[in-house]
Image (cartoon, rainbow, N blue to C red; front, side):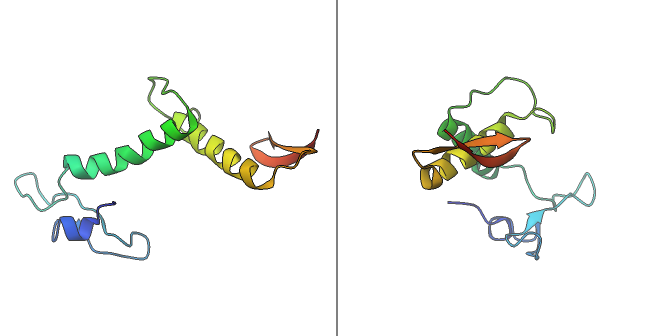
Length: 109
């Protein structure tokens, strides 16, 4: 179950919008006020569960390094999961799914 920021933290999250239908994280307006979105374990674990579940579903082992745009365990797992799902639905005995320059393609066997 995913947390809706606007329900969980009324007044401490930005309202729903087209960009963030469940609300978005809000900064404090000053250091001595508590009017920003708190970093709470339920909220953080909600996000963490998605990422750890993605790694588990694909068998990708975290490298132990911080992800970057150029090298990301999470993006590798996401790409792998997409390939797995496509293969389950489209692969025929005479073709297989391959990636060519990061794009999915069918290859004759």
